[in-house]
Length: 188
Length: 188
DNA sequence: GTCTATAAGATGATAGAC
DNA sequence: GTCTATCATCTTATAGAC
Image (cartoon, rainbow over all chains, first blue to last red; front, side, top):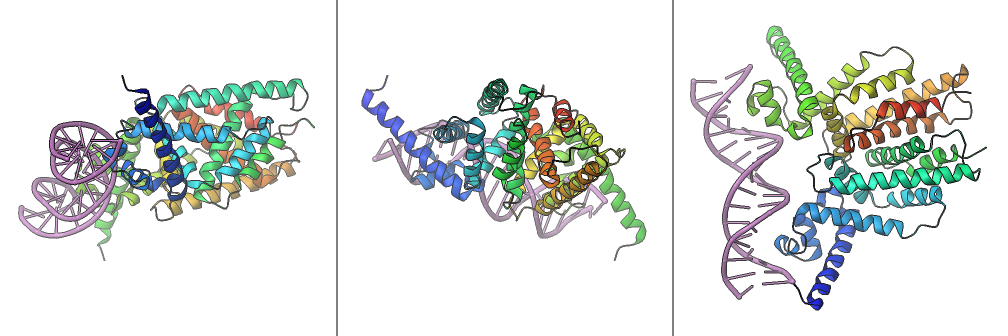
């Protein structure tokens, strides 16, 4: 359909827009999370930005995917340590945390454009964590009495819930609280 | 200022409005949570409803307070059991759960009309739980190794986080997952 | 106490010029 | 590819009649 050159340029521009958008939301917060505000920060008109993303939903889904991508990039291998590290990083970008939390609730509606993204994301997280917990029990580093699936669900819940408390009271030390919870899962 | 009779009638009408509003939000969900929608369900015009509540913020804060009141009404005494019971009840009113979760995130902004409500509510919950956990440790029913404040924070976080998962996937059994977590806190 | 009407503003989306 | 202009809605809040 499109020449390779133009297509590549479109992709690059999309990436550029997402990088700026991620920055803007991280700094200016959820309040600035309208298509208009982001467009202005990127240096485009609202219509100009919607040339690259057909709808608000598509734009924000792309922002969320981009953010996950950035987060996963620094993983070391020890999944509990990685989780605490990501959470500690989140405390520095409250705007993003809020966008994420708020969108995940709005996406409860099956009609919402980001519904599938969040469903898939939670399912993936739950499965991955469950598997790692089983492995930890096998090698003796985690308590054998834990129900792996339930524990995975609870780790995710604790992480999300701590974010809610942090947003309301930024003095909440999410990483420390989560680390305390995770320490309790280790074999003694 | 106002005659006692008129004042009492105003209070009664406010209560009636809140009851209907609670029902409407529980059934029709967060989407119906605009002043207009609630007003119509109550049988008033938007302006008519705003005669009783000066602003949207005041209305919703009142709705949340009313809901807490209803929830607390059935408490038995064993705080862990009460918590599971409230969570089980919540699964039957997803609209209310969503309103609550969504508003608590919006209220992260210190300017938000419900900001103080949520800050106070979390502080109260945390203090009450901490105290009960200490008591449980004293009488030997809860593990002595738990950090009471951290555990309180985590119980609240788990509860909130489970709600997020439940909203996205209503097959999530919040009460069972939470009960599993709480069982792990008991002395063995 | 309740209504109609309207202000004043934001939003997402689209049409069409260049 | 980007813009301006505009549309169609939606929101909360208020003024003023009855």
